[in-house]
Image (cartoon, rainbow, N blue to C red; front, top):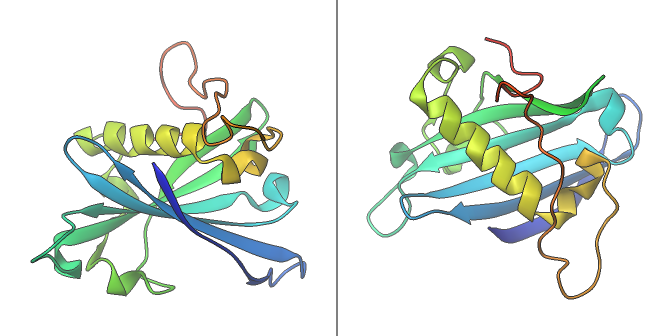
Length: 164
């Protein structure tokens, strides 16, 4: 996981509070996935956070037509942090990075769902800039780049907040 951008992106339309956007990449043996997360600082419980995963081929000889966007909505449920898949959009400049936005029904119930939730877990566990989303204190010190959080899976392995 490589953190890239971190910016204050303006103020929330409904409450006037500061909005924050962070971005990064996740590299696996098979893929590179870029991500963007944005939320209203101090208002995760009310608004949650939006996470866009930009998946597909990257590098020389590739273009936006080689990539697609998956949208996740992170929120705080009665049982703690949760996530659900939403219909993605090519807004806020994502059209420069990907040519297609996947709908929720193109992910849920498919093998792609496991990949999407694994990327979410990787971001949650490794990007310390997102501590506020999970109610964890912001770590400091030499191991600040990685942190371990409690699992967001129930005993059955289903993700809380996931609806099918």
